[in-house]
Length: 355
Image 1 (cartoon, rainbow, N blue to C red):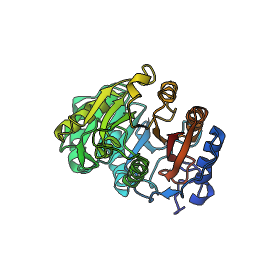
Image 2 (cartoon, helix red, strand yellow):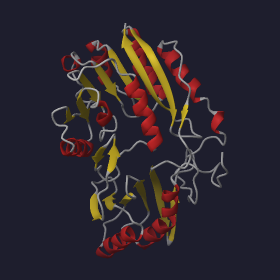
Image 3 (cartoon, rainbow, N blue to C red):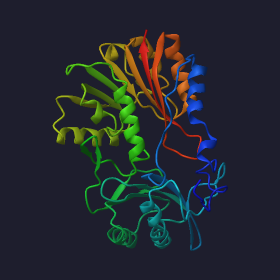
Image 4 (cartoon, rainbow, N blue to C red):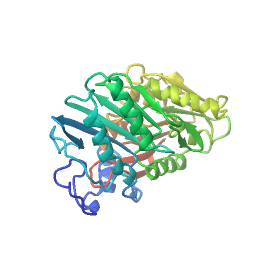
């Protein structure tokens, strides 16, 4: 590791040598446990200091503000002053953020700060534990102007986000399409990681005609959707309402409504039915850390010929892939992607085909 003063206390990094965790072997072992013995592609490593999203904890003790990540397996917050993973522009925001937080009446004891860095500057969501006052709003607006933030928003505890200031459009460009995500929205950790995932997914597509149908599950704001629609028609589903709103607005502005749709659907409570997937040329899914859960039963029963699974949790992948192994699927390719250096977290793209 490039030296970091926080290593050993901050829970963000588990090891100080990137090669100490064999992530290719982690993916290989997960697939083996699921019933597949298949070669795994070389690990794709994303560069350091490129992470464009971070969710930091903040605590207040009198006038002292602590802002950073938690100590491993602890509620203690480590006051971050540097990071070898984060985009340096985010690190540079930490001192002025502490100054702002110290001045806010809406922060009494604890909260969090989500910083996304889309195309044109920081997009900041402050989750605080008290009501925002008029002076608080003025201070946040001044902060946004002074630090070239595209947007700053607040929320009380786990409540809905409220816009404080939008100084320019908080747009992120996904495969050439401009998307305006909600405050605090999920983004892939780095642009390089996003590109590697898209490349592995599109490489795993079968031969498609312009009229072929791709069903995409857990589509988010369209990270994969806008790449997939270049190959076939896309029918996408997502459980988060704010992600669906952003996705739909973007596809309409891009004049893609004739080739793509996005539907709001909680796939854990109302999984896509077998009949809804039966005529798909391929199903692409990128579930949350917990995996695809209830959706897997119908996905397996649909017997779709090609399934491309994007995983951020090898343990969840084991359970979901085991169901595919029992149904007679084979692995065509497995690509490990190291978006989270110095940790055990692993992103992967696995392409399954029905025998």
